[in-house]
Length: 164
Image (cartoon, one colour):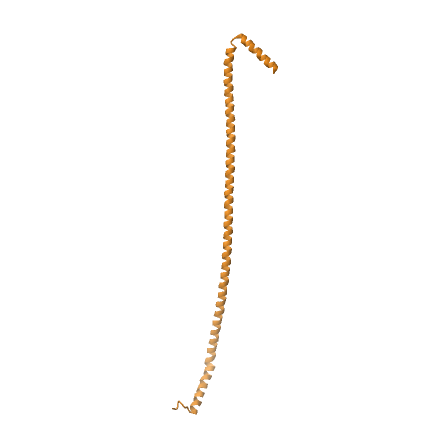
């Protein structure tokens, strides 16, 4: 029963032992423990701040990435538009050149046909003139075989010459 109702001496020595342990712990253990707890608290606080900064940086990077993606899409659209315009202009230029070349070929062909036609007509006229001369020679030979007809022909030519 002594434990249930302790004596004054026991209480005194227990209190004294408790205070001694408390003093020793306060002098040697609590300061390092409190210092370790403070350091731990600072480390945790710094880690939380670093995590918050990292979260903010990630958010900012995401925003920057979205901006870069939008800019890249806009630039891509511009490049595609310019490429389409360039393609259309190249096609139109080729079409114009082909049309001009076709017109030039047609004009050259028409000129060539005209010159060949003129050459053929000249050749035909020359042949016709030769044939006419041959026919005239034959007719004159037959007609002028008679001296009276020769004299009448000369008189007719003379009258034509005087009128002209």
